[in-house]
Image (cartoon, rainbow, N blue to C red; front, side, top):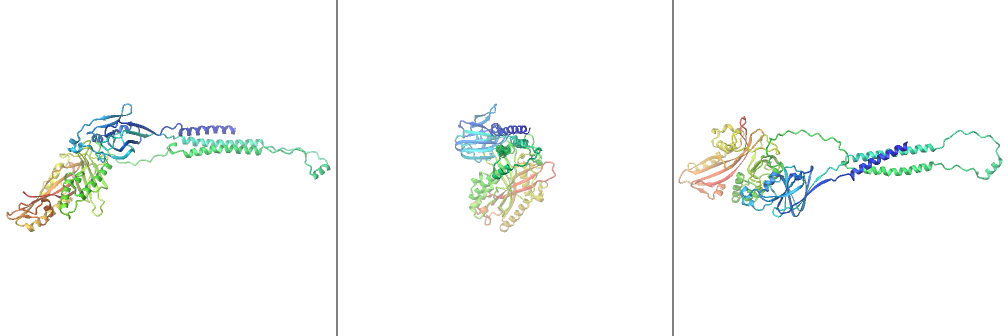
Length: 608
């Protein structure tokens, strides 16, 4: 019976091990699925739609074959299409049966009209656009693994002029795991081991059955001993009685040993197969870690996505920082204009003029590249679009925290910093939305704030001009405002200096007004807004005596900007203040708070 059970165990072992091996070999499916697209290579750009990339679940491995330079970038589908709207391109989409198909899309927009620049109508390179979430570039061929959602697409090109690479393939991993292969092989190995044990037990049982049994024998009758036999024994005569044959015990043991040697390799093979099983040959029974709770963020229905991602914003800030650093080193306003606009550009242009004429004139504070502490993008589907960023300086000698507003005018333009200021160390920013949620831009004439954004600059200028007599004094948190006392101290100092040389023959007057730059306001979570505005401070020195003139002996900056050293009519000097405020919502008990600012000399001219 033991042999029967051994045979049964051997059969079970063979079936289980064979099934496990078959799952890992002949029955195992492909490890990936692929879709290849061949375009006609007639356009400079190819757009692979997100539906093609998401045709199958899992990460997408994109492979592109070309003759020369191969460029690929990905971004939101609407943004990429907007960037391509002024040119012909090849679109790769899915048909009704889920197969990739190509079509040529004609231009729908005029880039030169959209951006207000004739340069935009000329062929452009796709490299370095602020719209891309990431980009890749290589010669001959390019392969990269992505995991993009359906609302993102991939742009493929060479240099923006030559035809885009024509051979494109997308592969997805296929789950070819065999979770029962490992258990089958291990179970079969155990069955084989049990069969071997039963087989040895059966052999031992048979061997014991063949062993001779000892029984009691009758004693023979006693007879006299023959002396002949004794003599023969003395002479060494061998008895003719046949001797005992060797029993079968030796052969039986040897045969069992040979069969054992046959069974051992089979068990060894099973062990090798068990050792070769990878993790996907076993059921994943380990409990997954319990995710920690995260705050629930409710995005309003129908809200547009944020203009940029956090990583995208960091890359844009780094590019702005690099361009401004190059412009500061070369005193080239054209370089600064590639990444600055409005008040931020105007102060730089004046500084470059002064530094070219006055070698000792200090440069303006640089724009740090990292670390970016806060990103607040506008939620919008079109253009222009704005982003606020807060960056800490890495300069230990001059630590500062920079706040800036960046704006992109159209899909083909780069983001430019239009407002740049420094946050005070004691500044507490209001609660802001996460970067992946974004904030709406508050219209300049919004009445949902305690003060409309387009009235904030004029109101603050009235505070500078009239102090506590201003009608807006009670609406601003003047107790924690550091700019107002600094302006008042500057007025007092300059008035005293002017009186030392022009007492009785001249006068110095001060006035503040709202700048021409449009305000930018982004909503906070408490329905307030961070508002960036521009305020201009002007002082005019004029003669009150027809025989007197105003000299610039102690003011080389004004002399360098005007090109004269004296005037009978006087001089007007203007300073630009880029100011960031927190403006609460209507019904709030809070006051308008100053968050940060930057003041610099803007212009000087002879008074008419």
